[in-house]
Length: 300
Image 1 (tube, rainbow, N blue to C red):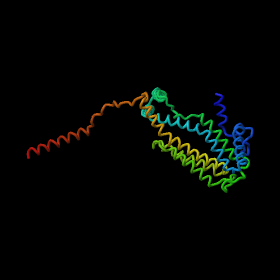
Image 2 (image 1 turned 30 degrees about the horizontal axis):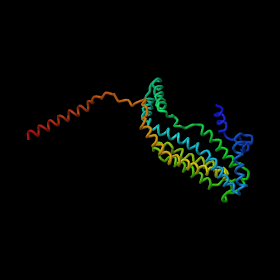
Image 3 (image 1 turned 90 degrees about the vertical axis):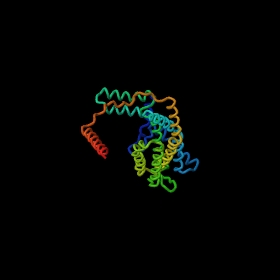
Image 4 (image 1 turned 180 degrees about the vertical axis):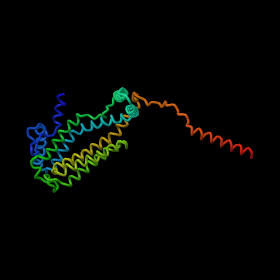
């Protein structure tokens, strides 16, 4: 649709010149970067704030505005994830059938069963992860980055003695810790198996932030610090406060309306194998020994 195409266009990177500065003719620059930069300048000039506090304020304002979108998306994802736990026995059977399939027809049947398990129970195979919220948030995050980097005055200002125009190892460390904490909070209340699959991302994400912050001006890193702290708060709300309630809600719903059965585990109808010759011989030897022992006891 036209809306989807527009959002997809907006979600691209800000158009930049050869020197890395954003082009003023770009859509994101005109509608997001420039207004956010003007807001920072207004806070500095009218309220006598430092550029550091202005960056923090603008970042918080924007994140609060889009917070309901993020929480709503997380809520949908958690509901789908909890429902998937009740479908797991059937999904495991379908996956096992897919692995054991030897013909194209058997593979197609197993895949069809997998899709039917989800569709019959109104559960998304993708866990409720939608593209629209990401498409809406990406240009905003991109605009905040370029605002913190290229707004006039930021490069020559200081915040708590740190130049916002130069890289700051202190801000880099704080940003890394913030995103590491956010990753840890995201693992609260999830199964151990899922935690193992998340370990790599829990380490990679903070390392990426640290790597990018090492060469970025402190003004940009400050934006990432605020974003990391805000992400911790948002993740705490969803994983610690909302998730137990959602889990109880889904359990009650599934108890009242159990999942529809699409596939069931196949019973093992393999006939029992006859005892081996060695086993028979061993049993025969044991019987003979028992008979001899019994005879000795009778003679006594």
